Figure 1 (tube, rainbow, N blue to C red):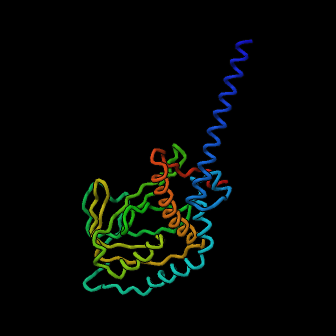
Figure 2 (cartoon, rainbow, N blue to C red):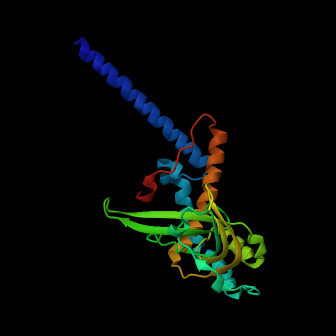
Length: 253
């Protein structure tokens, strides 16, 4: 009988603690949603740590037509670029691949061609540098039944020598848009941490992408800002708490 009473007491205490913690989390969510996000939206109350993402997606859909119009006006400038081909002979340069890097550090007069389509099934490189190109190798591992992707991000070291292209890239990047084709002619130096190329010529090409790529670029750009604002607020408001991370539930709830 005594053991039964002890078990009941433990269950009551445990249940009471759970209810206390649950209410505390609900109060925290209510405070953050009302104070920072200025909303009583149930999606915020349920997962305030994911709300920056949801909010960004909502704002992107609303502002997509204006965003597309602005980005397309920048893209149209690409066709008007004037290339200085004086003393430049394209036949002196040869394309290089990821596998062609080998062990050599210096590769003279190479061509690196890269485009980011924004397509889920196309391989792309992360944006480590404001001005870069990339070498990608994709193969299939039959033993493990999976694709194997290798990449080498190459930083362009002398973009200042191409002010017209730099200006267009700056405008596109300021709108978080990185979907274009870039062809770089120059001397490549393979580094331990990252590789670099001193360009003799840079060519830009506009590529056709679907509307969802524009929306994704806009949404991601807004999210970076909104997430930064949330983290800054959280650090100041709750200095002893860890900032909660984005969770996978945001993609299917």
